[in-house]
Image (cartoon, rainbow, N blue to C red; front, side, top):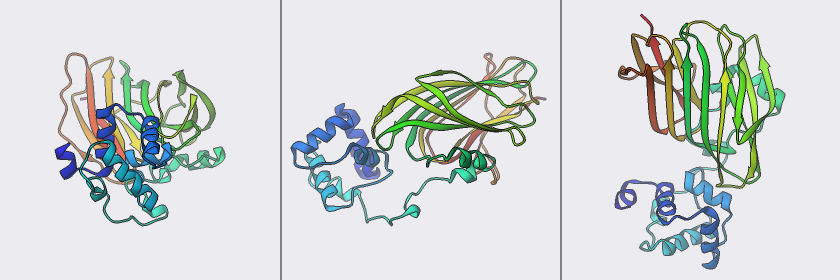
Length: 293
């Protein structure tokens, strides 16, 4: 806590206090109400994730109530807020427009009349990629922990793109079901709507599992994950059913149009699996690339 108060943000301190005290957003809302501060759970979720921060007089009264609730010295949290931020669309820092991240998918999103992609936040994303013995992409299994950023969230979109191959099939959904889907065989783009088993209010979380199964395609030499907004954690594992590649490196990109920045080569052990683990993932592309010979 001392380190966070000195070097952290308001959102980080609030998240730490909630975790340490075992408080849900609903219980926090009740505690604030007892102290005369009424705040919606959606607003509390925005404060916790850093998507928004308290600035109005009523919100600042709630912040002072938080200081009392958590036993913090007066103005401890208020001092972390800093000056007010500019309003409007430009006020959302740290994001990449999905048209830049998925340029070939824009017509599909228009056909779906897709809502903005800021209704859910990805907390953790775990992807296990299987490359078959013929060096082709066979399957990607995905587990995601998501958090609603507003009330009445019951679905979200997932994207897939393939090169010189037929389109993949979404299979084995858990805690969700496929909704509307749009595909473009010419560009290899797929957009699928996943409908959650339960409608979420702001701050509530869900765990969803699903997989993409791929028909035979070209030899695979890379795989990546694209983020339009920050996430807490990415775990990317690539398993090779045949011989492991001779060389494998992680890489990052801001968008598909920018040059990749490579990291240090990764060691692949007897399990024939390479893995990449990232925390506090910023918007952009994170992946692995390899050479077979």
